Image 1: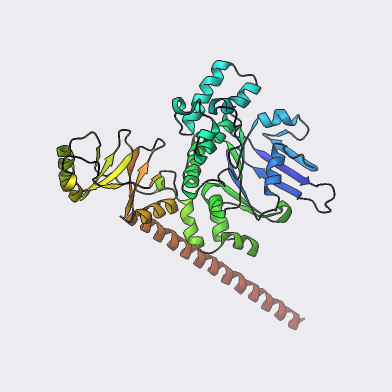
Image 2: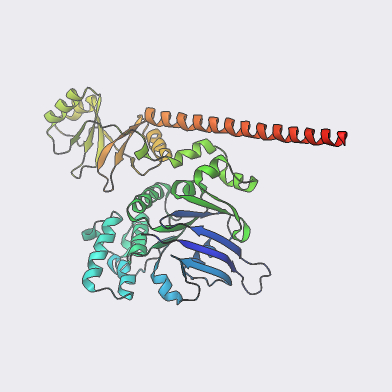
Length: 406
């Protein structure tokens, strides 16, 4: 489980610089909460993050984790209790995946048997087959796989706090979306306290329970929920981060698991052609989803494809190019549906196994509901402003009347 984090008057000054890099930051982060630091380059967000585990020593102020003041304890011991994941994974290239993950448990004195079990548990947790990846070296992994191992290493000793410094910034957009979904799923299971630095506001909306929008020297411009920041930014600086299309950005706040997922007729690559024909005919649809041997979406098959198959599915159908998980956002799902151009996309579980389908109609209904909610909220806010102005005008008139009588 997570632990609370309190930053009290936290500051950092570097010799020769008249202005502090981080100036008097005060913040309370709840146990089990995911908080995102977002702000312009050089605003001090990474410096603030690194002071929490004292990779950078504070010049002033206090840090409390779980109520314990960690400002004066041994920083090496502190770092063993705080998970840390960075961009490009930070894996040691001369160590295998298993050795990288085992690093901190070994340092804190875990037994070999316990470490071996933990390595396998962590690989499974981040969606990597322990038998396949245990002995590999980082150079033998894709960027996304390296980042998964980096997260596994950060969580290996079961720390209550996980610090993440732009961990997904160096991977391609599709892999980044999948890694974000994986982090959301992990947090549902683990309930750690996560502090995450990014410059991408869309990523902040997708991942954060609360977002701290930071100005220069880590001054807090607004610290609130994604919904509150999108609908009621504190000032023009925050509005600049929100950018255009706030209503559409709210698609990042709703998950696929929150909307209806429909079942779809499926067959497997091991099914005979006649069975597939029969299933398609019985389903009453013009299309069926072919699953591979592991139950993962493989191809969309239409009636015409089967007619042309001539006893083999090797060249029949259309490959499934994109899928979404239940933890993906509606924005992810909408992009997948539009990319596929067929009005639907397959939804998968943690191992890529098929769990259902979400379609364009469902997504558009959700978009309309969000837009309507925004419209009603804007009308209510306008009504409140008008009432406040009327009350102020009335008070001023009463005051003028009183002065005339006097």
